[in-house]
Amino acid sequence: MDRIFGLDIQLGFDVILQAIAIFIMFMALSYILFEPVRKVLEDRKNRIAKEVDDAASDKEEAAKLKAEYEARIKNIEKEADEILAQARKKALQREQTIVADAQEEAARMIARANNEIELEKSKVKDQVKQEMIQVAVAMAGKIITDQIDLSKQDALVDETLKEMGDKTWQS
Image (cartoon, rainbow, N blue to C red; front, side, top):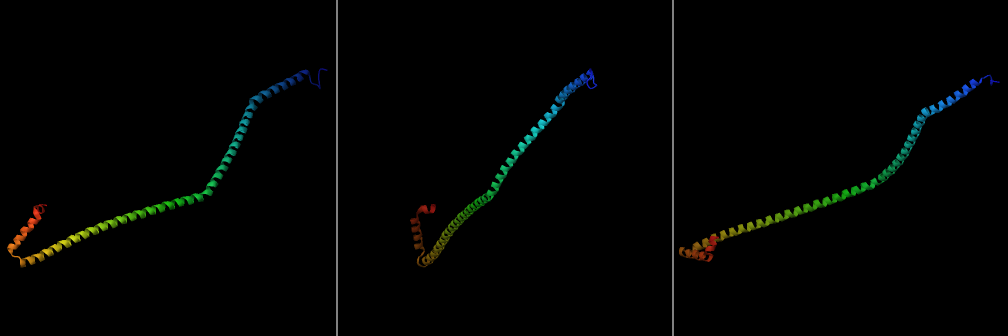
């Protein structure tokens, strides 16, 4: 009985040897070929997991931003009202400043006009005095010429000059 099923021992030994060689070759090729593929698949799996985590965190951040913007939108009317109130307040202050400046200018103009009126009054008074003096001198001249002769007139002039003194003529 050298043969099993018509197979000889050499064939059985060759089959077993080939099976072992195939197994060793499968292990070597598995390490050489399948290990890089497994590494690529693992890297891809990790990258996809990272992208899913990033997408989840981005989604959470987007939800926060959306909530923040919705809150801002709700407060926009309040902010607009505040801005308008501030603008009205500034306009009112500006109006008051303009009115105060106008009143000050009007007061200065009135004071200037009053000063000019006073100056004109004093000029008119001076002119009236000068005219009154001229009229009085003319009247006195007529009266004196009728009543005083030349000797009396010279005496009056000398007396007046003595009363006025030298200081009046020097100043």
